[in-house]
Length: 277
Image (cartoon, rainbow, N blue to C red; front, side):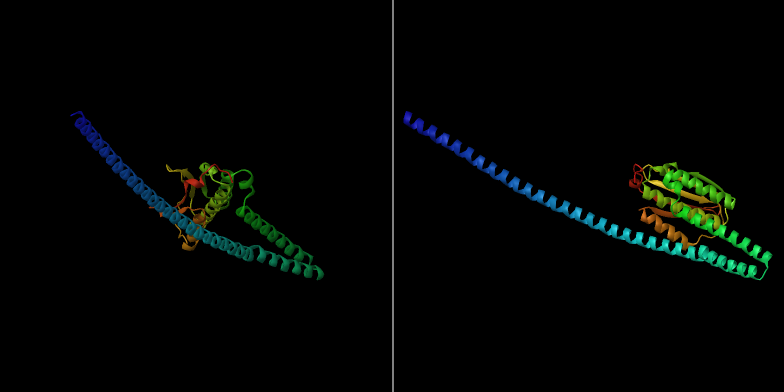
């Protein structure tokens, strides 16, 4: 009887052990399957993330290429504009001055001193006019005050100069733009200069405002508004829009009910960093 009892006990223990082993084997298999599935999912996620990063890199490279093309186009347009200005302005003036001086020399040789004095006086005035135009060109390309004192004094000086010359009231509120980097400040200054110059030529207006404000998302919006009634030339606006695009900015034009115009230039938040170059 005891022998049978021991056999039954051993048999029961063997069954339990076998069952435990089977459970362990099944659990190990399930865990291994879980590891395999998890590893496959991880690889799939890595592949998806890599594909996303590659797509984003391709988009950035494409945008960089388009931006580079726009910068080159803007630089070419600026060179053409400067070449045209120099040819039609200072170069023509200097050629005229040379002819006047030749005429003065001949007048002196002929004993017509009064005629010579009048010609020289006209030549001197033309020479001073040429100096002023070249000084204005130098100021517009890169004003010393922008480099030495900052964006706000440069825009205010520009507004004062145009305001007195054309008898137009120009209000300026651009302190927020001091946060921009050096290149962005130069680019925005050139945009404001073009918009102000265009505004005084097209009306002329009686009032112009230049305001730079910060939006909730950190972007900086520049609004140049005037009450002029004249026509805006599309080619000029396209050139300004091209300048804005080189700063990764957006450019829009709004025709107001009073006949005036508001031009908006929106620069992204990352352009308004710490103001460092």
